[in-house]
Amino acid sequence: MTGEPGSLVAIPFPYTDLSTSKRRPALVLTSPDEREDFLVLAVTSRETEGAAEVLETPDLEEGRLPRRSWVRVDKAFTVNSSLVQKEYGRLTDVTFKRVHKAFCYQMGCERIAVV
Image (cartoon, rainbow, N blue to C red):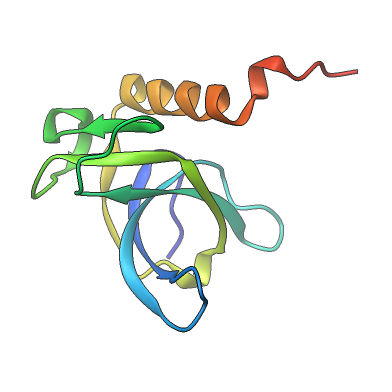
């Protein structure tokens, strides 16, 4: 099972000490590469200020959210498609672009000159 950009998926997120992991939602940010690896952003139901974009059910083109959630644009991870355990839904194009723009701003993408 693989997610496409804009998909909300469940993957095992490791704890920061790498002792174990917990199944958590994530937003797929990029398409899988030739090794089936792709970039995801952490999603949480805990109210988060700062580097996070709010998500509510109207922000989804497909599926639904059980509660208001936040995409952590400062918590990006590379995962393999084999780790995707479930697909919850898909963001609207407008919402995905908003989150992607916030991620790029947070990571400094807009400030990097391409040579």
